[in-house]
Length: 184
Image (cartoon, rainbow, N blue to C red):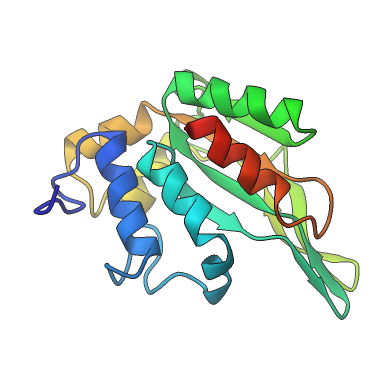
C-alpha cells in the first residue's frame, strides 16, 4: 500500500488506510477536509487509527469534553461494510451508546436528510455541532468525488453510513473503547 493515494484507492480498507495516514499527519489533507486534522483529534487518534485500519472510514469525529460554558459528546461518523456496521451497532447498544447505520439503498439521491439532527456540542446552551444527517448520493459525490477514482467513489457510495455517539456529555472513553473492541 506504499504507492497508495486517494485516486488509486478502490476498497474500504484502502480508503481507511489513507484516512489513518491523514489523521496521523502523513498527508496534509483528505478529500473532505482541506488542511490538517483539528488539534482535538490527537486525543482520540489511536481509536480513530484502529477504526480506519479495520475498514471503518471515518468522516467526522470529536472527543468528549467540557469547560467554561461548553460541553460536547464523543461521536464518530463514517462508512463501512454491512457486517462491520452491525458489529458496531451491537456493541454500541450493549454499552448504552446511541448508534444508527444507514444502508446505501436508503441514502437519498439528491437532498441530504436532516430529520435526525442531534446536538453534540453546546456553548452556553446553544447547539454548535449536530450529527445525524444522512448525506445524499449527490453530496457524497461532491465531497469525495474530486479526489477518488470512479471505483473508489463507487465503493464509498455502496457502503453503510454509521453514526455513533455517547449521549452522556463529557464522558471521554466509553465510545472509543467500545468501538475499538467492536472492530478487533
